[in-house]
Image (tube, rainbow, N blue to C red):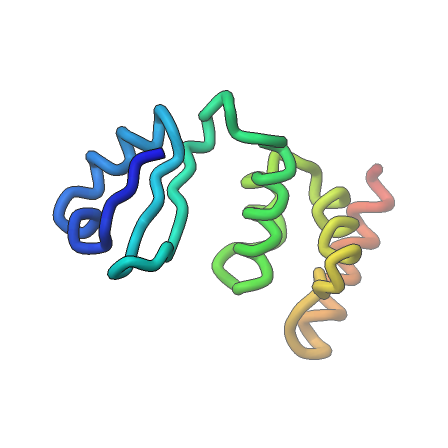
Length: 114
């Protein structure tokens, strides 16, 4: 496993990404591990579907992506993403009462066409 410090990563991120295509790259801040760069097409990546599902859930929970985008990141259906979020204790419907009502109406329409 290769390691880079934050300064090296900042100065040449492309090199770290190329290295990550071959093996995980450990990012160090001082002498302490700060992050791990993993190339998502890396064949040796354990349980790639699980990693993508965790990534999609984390992005949704942080508010960085919508539910639909999180499902696409994870390569699962929206229903499967909702089930996964539920197991994690993360509310799939977020926002105020009006948002929830609109989401419920959309869900009912979607269920009617399924």
